[in-house]
Length: 320
Image (tube, rainbow, N blue to C red; front, side):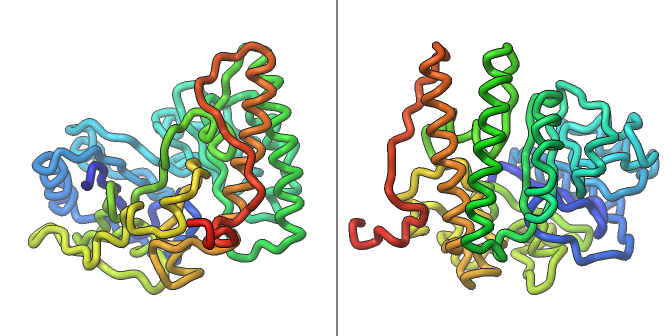
């Protein structure tokens, strides 16, 4: 059941996930399309997330946006190239490099997303450790998951270990910072994936619906309806967890189970790649260790994460 709608305000609206936005020319959503999109969301009782480009919108657009409860997702320094009011007024601020994050004055009421490739991720460990002490919520999104090798998995495991040590230190000092890669699994009791095509849909500036922003802003995507005729998602059951043979038996509940990344790497929207699974399980296992250490220090978590002897559920398919 669709519960959320992501509205891309421009072709160049920032990416906040794994995909790179391949559209470079500005194409602002027509004002009437924006109004119609809001009306559609109201009729369907959907929560709205507006995704902004890297330039300031006209006042008439801002008035229409502010006419409805919503979440703002903005690139860092959207209007002034720095820590200006535009970033401060965001619910979610997106950094496209770790270097950008070094110039930000963080706020406790804002969530932050860092999009980075593996090379900058591994090199930027200390910057991430420092950032954890300044934010309430940090999401790390890795943009080249599909290129990970066995050596990269080892480096990722080491990085997660260092981040978990910092999170433990912060918890002990009285700060309960959240990091999607580790603390989410400590709090969940079921899958909490992105929900593209199942609970979330995207409206693009062309007035058509897409499974997620990646299916509009990157190559090879396709529309799944429009404002005039409504949604038309072919084989919609394939986007559901109960039709994902690997994911439905998995307990790496923090995994994003990215539909776009699935399709890119396995040609199936409901089947993740080996790389995505291994990374999710490395996160899960580090979360398990962090959870045990915090419980030993008296923190009252209800969740339990059991020991496992695999990193890719596909390797134990004979046990299903």
